[in-house]
Length: 266
Image (tube, rainbow, N blue to C red; front, side, top):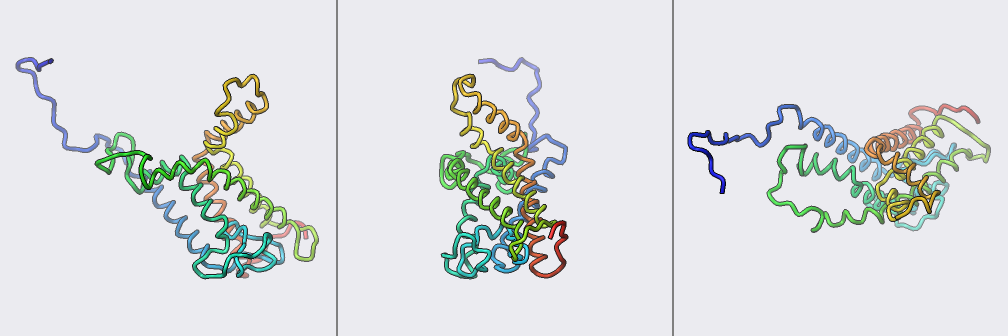
C-alpha cells in the first residue's frame, strides 16, 4: 500500500459540494419555470371546457383533439362523442393521457425535469440531491420504459392533429378558406411531426436493429434523416410547447370573440 512521503502535505479538505463558480443553477431554474408555466396553462385550458372551437372556420385547438366528450360541440366531435360530460374529465381524455406519457418519458424531458425538479443531478459536476440512486429500475421511474409504446400513440394523435388542420381549410358553409389560424395550425402540426420523428424511439424503430445498412438503402436514408432530426430533439421539444400554447391561445381568442381571424382566402 502506498504511503504519503514523510513531510508531505495532506490533501486539502474541501467543504464545498462543488467547485463550480458559474451560475450552474440558472439553467435548471429556467427549465423549471418554463415547464411549470406551460403545465399550469395547459391544465387550466384543458379543464376550462370552452373557447376551443371556432365553428365558422372549423378551428379546433389541439388541447381538445380529438373532442370525444358528450359535452363537445357536435361539429367539433369528428370521431363521435362517447365519454361522459364531466368538469373533471377533459374533452380530449382519449388522447391527453398518452400525450402526457409520451412527453414525460421523452429522453430530453427526463433530463430536463430530473435536473430542474428532482435535482438528480442539477448540473454537471454538482452532487445529486439524493443519497441513493437506483436509476430507472424501480417504481415509479421504471415506467419510463413505456416510452417506446407511447411513441406509437403519439403518431396516431399527430394524425388526428393533421386531420384537424385539413378540416380547418373548409369553412362552415363548405367553401375553401385559409387564414392566419390555418397557418398557425399547420406550423404546429409540422413541428409536432418533426418532434415526434426526432424521438429516439423513432430512430431505433427505423434503423436501430439493422446489421447491414447496405442491404436496406431505403431504411438507411430514413434513418439518416431521423438521425439529423434527433440532434435537434431538445429544441423541437421546446418549440412544440410554444406552438401548442400559441395555437390554443389563438383559437381561444377567436372563440371568445377577442378579435377576428386574419383571412387570406374566404
